[in-house]
Structures are given as C-alpha cells and as structure tokens.
Image (cartoon, rainbow, N blue to C red; front, side, top):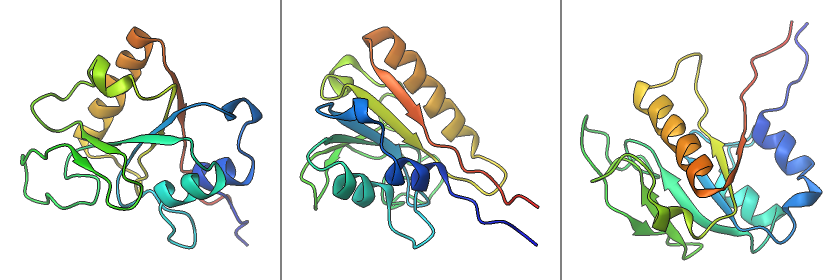
Length: 149
C-alpha cells in the first residue's frame, strides 16, 4: 500500500515559515509547478502568503510554456493576473541580473519533474543559486518526493 506524500509546494503552503512575514518573494517555476489539485504555485503562494509575491522567473520554454520549440528565447513580461514582472532566464541572459533580483528578498524554486530534469532547468537553478549568493538573497527549493512504499 502506498502512503500519501506531499510535494514540497504542498508542504510549504500548508506550513509557510513564520520568517517569511513581510519578505518579498520571487518564484522560479514552470507549468508543472502544481499541487495535487493542479493549482499552480503562483496562485497558491499568492493566496496563502498574500502580497508577498513580487516577481516571477521562468526557465526555458517560458513561464506559461508558450515557447515549446527548442532553443527559442522568451522575453520578460508582466504577469496578466498578479501584474508583477516575469523575468525570463532563457533570454539574452541565462543568469539573473542584479536588477532582476532587486525586487525580492527570497527566491522560491519549484521545478517539478518526473524523475529527470531538462538540463537547462538544472543550469537555471544553479545560476539562480549563484546569483542569490552574490546579491545576498535567500533561496527555498521545493522538492518533489516520489511515493513511499
């Protein structure tokens, strides 16, 4: 019999750390960043930590997976619902700039997979970790854990 498990996102939403209060949050994710009810991380974080999400970051293929062709760069946009910037980390630069990180205190990374990650996602996460260290930002990585038997 398999036990129920929670994704890192579900655990984060159920018990957001108290020290997040008043912090400006950024989210690096893609369309697969959902909970068990297929609610996207952007919406969940906005609902459960209201007013704290100040920037979104997208890996290759765009935040909404609108760039499915290989090696197609995407532009920065404004999120149509939250009206906050979506910085493409697969554009003229793959490395977050100081300007991209000025709007946040903490970067949340939620790049779910099914046992493998597209290699550009790993590099995007790595570049974000390096930039966070360089610019003095904290990072929370939400991990997807497989079923426990």
